[in-house]
Length: 84
Image (tube, rainbow, N blue to C red):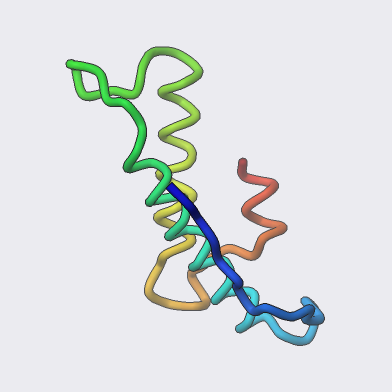
């Protein structure tokens, strides 16, 4: 399996281009969803116990926030890092 995302394919000033960052955040959320779809699910529907399940839940929550339909509802990368 190969994963790639060129994203904005250029450097951008985060302070003046929040819409570009929100598009990048959506791409990151889609990547998270794809990666989560490849996790091994146990017979009880979880991704394992303890820390593994908590990590998967946190990543699912982050992916949902990143792929919100509204740009304004999506977190910035700084907010996402703080949450994770």
